[in-house]
Image (cartoon, rainbow, N blue to C red; front, side, top):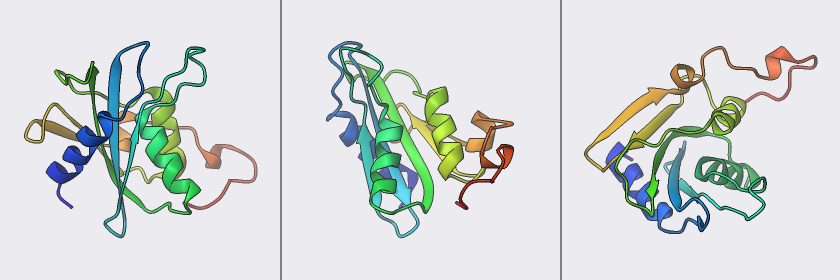
Length: 141
């Protein structure tokens, strides 16, 4: 799947966002190794703490289905669903990506299907903290 198709899927996912408090809607489309796409949107909560980002929704949805072969993710977002700027994953989402993705995992952030930038996870989260920093080392990715 090319980047434009993945970005289009992220825009479609953004339309399903539940963001009545911030009104900042975000969509994400996660490409798996077999070409399948798993989407996610942000889901807010009046208590704020239970809110979950689009990127984590997509990743957790895939992991809950036994999938961990992540290739890249496209992220779009904007106030009331109007995308005017690049929307980057928050720090928590970057940390979750570090748990499940290789350092060269691609993160695409877009204003449109034709206006986008691509970064490696290692560029957006250098010197990440992970299982190797803990005794026991954790599971292999």
